[in-house]
Image (tube, rainbow, N blue to C red):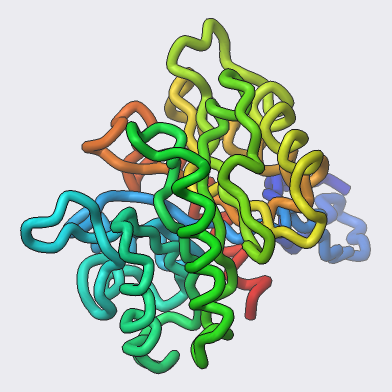
Length: 308
């Protein structure tokens, strides 16, 4: 009996394998169904972060299963700091329905959140849930101090907790950078208040890296510090994630290694958004037709399927 052909299987694929006898005497033909092990994907909800406008619309088409994205708000006329993006405008109309927008604002009038919550469209016309942050990456802005920040975050928590639409808000809390925690030895509690339910940390490989960082180098110093300081019931997310030391297939392979590492070593992390902005920090950008995008789509699809 001779094997006529063979095909390597990818994880999750199955195939029929037909065996033929080539002798004159004839032989029994055996047909065997072979199924590879399913892909070991992390329990992460995967999103993508890009600029407003046409790029968001393209990403919504290119990554239809994205589970999350950031929205940084919009500056009103004559104001220097952004308020929450109005429902049905900007990213809050262009993101796919599978998304959970993570909306932030820097305007000091926290009370503006009330009408935003009041006017939240019904689920069938909008998004099922949102996260909220006041003043993302506050440690990087001149004039912002923990003494100013914490009372405002506490007021945001209070407003959301007392609102009828609070069930649509899955988390309220700060977003800081991994660089601030890792290199600057920042204390996560500087920007924390009791009652906040989520903590976001933007993690990138550093611009001055002299080698491609391993997942342990990338994540452990940052996430371990959060575990040490925050209550155990606080959700931990990575709203922005990017690598620039490698590109193309090497970066795609690194994405897989990072996600698998987070799954095995940091299961407390629930969300991650690939940073993919061709204008702002383009070194982290990858087009929708690239090995990196193929990895992102595959993991997004698995995360989206797990939600259904």
